[in-house]
View 1 (cartoon, rainbow, N blue to C red):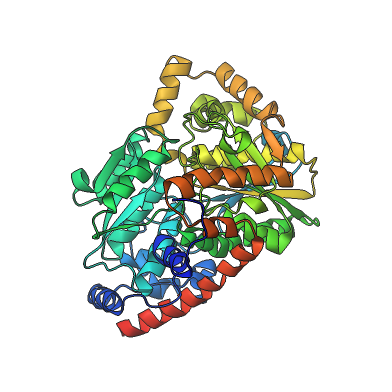
View 2: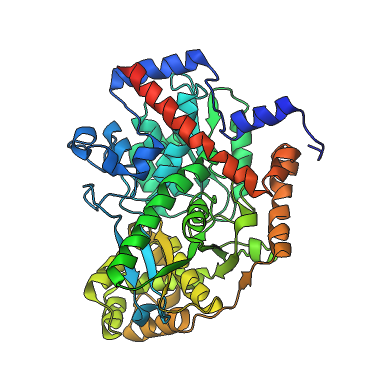
Amino acid sequence: MTATTPTTDEHRDALENQFGLADRIVDEQALANSVERFRERGIRLPTFAQLADPSTFSHDDRVGDADPQGPDARNLWRVHWYNDLGGARVSVPDHVVLPTELTGVESPIIVAFGDRFPMITAHKVLAAYACLAPRIVTGQFDPTRHRAIWPSTGNYARGGIAISRIMASRGVAILPEGMSQERFDWLNRWCENPDEDVIRTYGTESNVKEIYDACNELAKDPGNFILNQFSEFGNHLGHYTVTGRALGHVFETVRDASGRDLRLAAFTSATGSAGTIAAGDRLKDDYGSKIVAVEALECPTMLENGYGEHNIQGIGDKHIPLIHNVMNTDVVCAISDVATDELDVVWNTDAGREYLSRKGIDDGLIAAMAHFGFSATCNVLAAIKTAKLLDLGPDDAIVTVATDGGAMYPSERAKTMTTRYRGEFSHTDAAEAFGQHLASASTDHMIDMSEADRRRVFQLGYYTWVEQQGTPFELFEERRHQSFWKGLRRYVGVWDEMIDSFNERLG
C-alpha cells in the first residue's frame, strides 16, 4: 500500500475491523448469536472498571468454587491483578520490594506478580480478554461461526485459548516452534484438537513476521478472526485501565508502608506486543513517572534498528508494535538473554538460593524469585540500570512486573544447565552470575530518549505496518500525537456500557 491519505471510510474501517476500535454494534445478528450462546452456558462478562477495581463486585458471588486453573467461565472474574496463588481475592496485588542487597541500587524496585492470573498463570490472559470482549459486545466476533486466531510468542496465545474456551468459542494458537516446551504442553492440554489448533511457525522469539504471514494466510477464510495483540488497541487500553491502576495501588501501598515521601520515578517493561507498557502511560499520567521500554540486546530493534534472535521469551522484537505509544517513551534499555538465562538458574537451584542467602537476602524473597520468568528478570535488570542512568536515590521507586513465573521454563533451564554449566551449578557459578549481571549492571545499551530518538523508533514501524500489513498511512501518522492516545480512552467507557447491556440481555 502506498503512503497516500486514505478515505474516511477506509480509515474508519481499519479502526473498527483491523484494530478493534468499534464504539457501536456492527452486526446485530452476530450479537444476538453471542447472547444466546452465553445465556445457554451461563457466561457473564466483567467490565474493565470491575477488573481494574475488583472490590466493586463480590468474589464469592461471581467466582464461587471455580478452580482457578480450570476452564470455568467464572474465571473471567479473576482476570485481574488481585488474586493470590490459590485464586483467592487479595486487597492489594501480590508484589515484592527488592532491596539494595540484591539490586545494588538504593532505589526500591517494586515487582508485581503476573503468575497470579487464572488458567495460564500469566497476565496475558488480561490482554486476550481485552481484545475479545469488545469484539463480542460490538457484534464483530460471532462465536457460532468464527475461530479466534491468537498470534503470539507464547503467553498471549495461551491466554487466547483459555479466554476462547471459557467464552464458548474455538481458539487457534500461533507461536514460533522454538518456544519453551511448557507452553506447548499447556496448549496440548487445553486445545480440543491441538493438531489443528496449535500452529507452529518458523523460528523463535524474534520471528514475529512469520506469525503475521500465517495470520494473513488464515485471514483469507472469513471464518477466521485474527486477534493480533500487536495491533489490537484493546490490548493497550486493557493494560492502561486495569494494569495501570493496579500498579498505582501497589506503589501507593509501598509508599505508605515506607513512612517516606516516595515518588514513582519510572516504570520498566519489555515491549513484546506493547500491551503491558501501556500501564506506563497511566502511571505517567497519575504520578509523572518515566516509561522505560526494554528489549533483548541480541535483537536491539529500538536501540540500534537491529535484528537477531534471543531467548527472553515473551518480549518479541525485530519490529515496533502498532499499539506502542513510542512518542511517550522516555528510555530504551537492552538486556542480554545470557543474563536472564543464568539468573533464572540462580533463582531456581539450591546453590543459587544458598548464595543469595549468604548475601543477606531474606528467605521469603528468595522463595518469591521462583515466580520470576525470563521477562520478569529482564524487567528487573532494566530497573536497576534505569536507577543508575537517572541517578535515582532511596526516595525514588521503580515499578515493574513479573509477567509470568519460572514454572514456564524448566526445559529452558535444563538447556542452560547443560550448555553453560556442564549439568551442575555450583556456588562459584552463582557468585559469577550474580556479580556479572546484578552487581556489575551498568548503563551500557541504554538511550535517554531525545525527540529525535523517539522519531527514529516511531518511523521504524512504518515498514511493518504500512508497507507490509496495509495500515492506512493517516492512521499510522496519527499515533505520533498524544491526542490520539488520549482519545482512545473513551472506548473503555463505551465498551463497559455495552458489556452491561450485553449482560442485561442475558437475563
